[in-house]
Length: 218
Length: 116
Image (cartoon, rainbow over all chains, first blue to last red; front, top):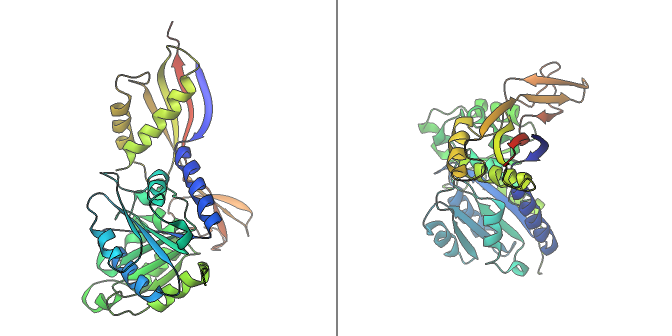
């Protein structure tokens, strides 16, 4: 016999993500899901962000990696709460893993939570974790063809940071082509070129973050 | 490679749906996978074979229908099936479009045979 049904295979994750989101809303925490390939500069971006937002937002970070707690140690060295999640092989974070990470944080002391996803341009785009917005970071060293090769991540992101622009003189990267392709895939995408090495463009990123995350506790 | 996790989620749904039919075996499952989804059908089949081994869905055939990417242009008030993943109306060039289909990751039906 045939059973007719229409069910989203990811519904179990969607349910948990929605619960996370509700919890974040209750606590007044703005949550970013930071995605990008391995080596794009996700953790370095967070370090520069923490340095500049100290005293302006109370930040915390959940780090997702397949293995090691190196990234959480890098973040914790800046004096903010950092939780490491090791996925043990899974190529992305999902709602349940993030729920586990939330349990280790004092939510009352946080305005802005950044969840750094596993370095990967594919799978993280498919799984909601309860975030307010998805942010993507891509670097000029990766090449300008990424929007067409990995469209879903560009499509689901609200903001795209183009990192390592200080390397532009040394790599064959057509910024205008990259920008045009990214906007074809997602016309609402906000694109901010940055360099975490020189600091160029970071003001635009901080403005984007501060406009969205509320400041409390003052 | 997130197909293993997706195969596990799929198996959970299938087992839940088949639970009222004691002793039943699942022989066929129809899926709808959007063109923009990041799931690789062959990898999903491989993972599904692995997670179903020894259970009620062992050997079940996975029939996968690829759902095209369809966008709706608000200006043209029309839907268009598009090949490229661009959120731009192929008719008028406007960016005021919404995705109608293309991200599906759904189970649409399954066939079971009675255990008796």
